[in-house]
Image 1 (cartoon, helix red, strand yellow):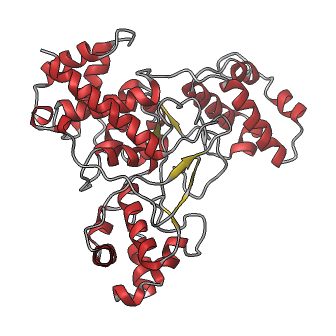
Image 2: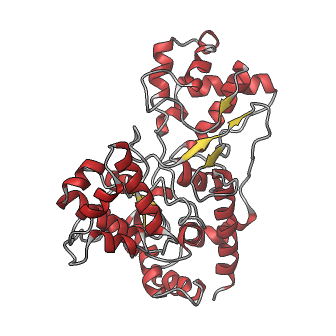
Image 3: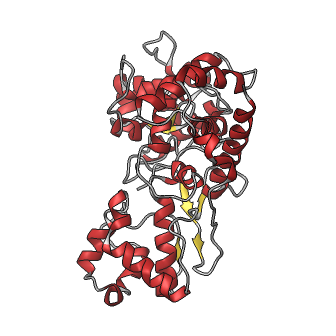
Length: 395
C-alpha cells in the first residue's frame, strides 16, 4: 500500500529500497512493521501553540517569497529559486500561502536532503554494483560477464561501468538505468522495463506517486514526470502534494508527516488497527496496511476484524470490501471504521485516538540505528515548529 519515502537525514542511507526487488506494489519502499502490543502507549498529539492564528494567516506570495529567502540557511544555493518553487507549489495546488504550510514543506525538504535539489549519496557506486551483481547472481550471470557487458560505451560516450563507478546522485543513477534498460539486452534481463530507482529529488518523492498525481503540474514536462521528480521544482511540487494532497481530519500535522513517510492514511489506519487489536485480543503490527498487497490471502488485520464480525454486524465479504478502501478518505467514514472505533471507545470508557504514529521500523543495509516512521515524523515536526517560530520573527 504505502509509498515509504526516504528519510530525512538518511536519504542517503535509505537509498533503497532504491534498487529493491520487484514488490507487488510499485511504490513500496524498504521497511518493516514492528508488531506493537495493543496495550502499548500510543503517541497522542494535540495542536501546538506554534500553529496558532499568526502561523495560519495568509501572506501575499511576493512577501512570502522574500521571507523564505531570509529564512533559508546561507549555504543554500539559489534561495530565491527555492522560495519561488515552494510558493508556486502551494498556490498551484490551491493551498494557503502561510507560515505553517511553507514551514511544513521546508521541514520535509530539510530533513530529507538538507535543501539540496540533487543530493549526493555516499558510497552510491558500491550500492549500485552490489545490487546489479545480486540481480545477475539470481539469473546465474557471472560477475565477469556483467562487467564485460557494461564496459561498452553508453550514449554519453563513457562506458556504463565508468558512469556507475562515478555515481554521486540518484538522478545520475536513474539516468544510467534508463540507458541500460533502453540500450542493453543485459539491462532488460536484469530490470525488465522498470527503472529500479524509485525515489529522488529534494523531498525524496516516489516516482510512482508523482506519475499518479501529476494532474495540475504547472511546469512544462520536457521529457517525463520521472525526470521532473529529480528537479528542484518538481521535487518540491510533488512533495507538497504528498503532504497536503489528500483530505485527513488529523489533530496535528505530525500525522501528515508520518503519512509522508508511510503512505496516505497510515496514521488513521494504524489507529484503526490499534482499536481492532484491543477489541480482538490479537497482537497486530500497527503499520497502516489493512490488507495484503502481495497475496490474495487475508492479512492479520483482516483476520482479526473477522473475529469482530458479529459485533460490528458485518459479513466477511463486507469487511473485506471495506478494508480495500484503506487507501482512501472514504474508509474513515465507513461503517466498519465507525463501528470498530465506537466499540473501542465503549470498551475503554473514553474516546480512543483516531490517529497514531505507525509502528514501522525502516530497514536498509546501511542503517545501523533503530529508525522509525515515528522518529521521522517527530523530527520533521520539530523542524516545522522551529521554522514557524523563526518566520514569526522575520519582518
